[in-house]
Amino acid sequence: MRPKVLITDAVHEDMLALFSDAGIEIVYTPDTDQVSVEKIIEDFEMLVINSKIQVNKNFIDKATKLKVVGRLGSGKEIINLEYAIHRDIVFHNSPEGNRDAVAEHCLGLILGLLNFIPRSFEEIKKHQWNREINRGNELSSKTVGIIGYGHTGKETAKRLSVFTSKILVYEKYEKGFSNDVVQEVEMEEIYTHADIISLHLPLTNETSQLINDDFINKMAKPFYLINTSRGKIVNESHVLVAMKNKKIVGYATDVLENEKLNTYSDIEKQKLKELISENTIITPHIAGWSYESKRKLAQILAKKMLLSFKTH
Image (cartoon, rainbow, N blue to C red):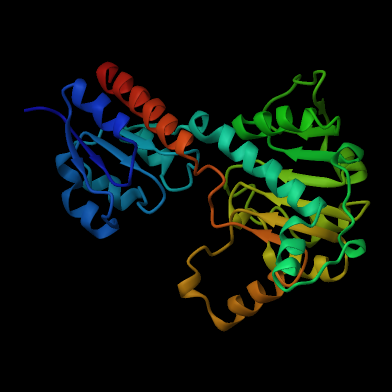
């Protein structure tokens, strides 16, 4: 019998072609859910997920044949990596596939905030021609603090460099990377000098709620906050207070603590309403969601998974 792969999210056709050419039987169910996958996972050697399927201990115990799990994108929080390793299951993600898309989106968010682009457009829709209150700030005059220097952090820095901004980078798990574009620093220097904070971090126990009152109070100057990582890295309630107090002068995010808007409590609805009323830009987790990235994610992940499966 041919080995089987279960693909649980919409993917570019290149992934299907790569698996098919390798002799893998494909079950493609992009509209499936957690319960449905758990019922059939025992039949599969390989699994492709995005964000809706949680590969926890209970799931892994049911996946008796599973050898390789692939994640479209970068997030690792949806798999119990320690238990997967214990069960001899290989995990791959594919941050190389959407790093360009995320970096470009991040730059768009920064420029949109600094120049009040969304707000002034909304005013034009109301036939309001307000120039002075929408006077912008030049990115070249700002110091940007990048926290996290993995795939998207590096690509974002490359794009920022053309604006001649000063770029300070903190990365806990990599050292010695200063160059003509970025300056490697400790967090104290970012607290002291940064006008803009851009987050490029995975969601872990260490990074959860990183941006909170304590972080905000350590910042020496009012600052702009950009998040294209994970919503739960930011405490939105603390950010809202800081925006009302003008300690955060602009907030642009592609992610929210709770992205299922139809489940919002009255408190969550009110918080979002108040956030939107400030100088904010919020997009629906689309930073890595380009046509080009869909293809690159599929190709990169399929090749990684096939190589591991052959050598497993």
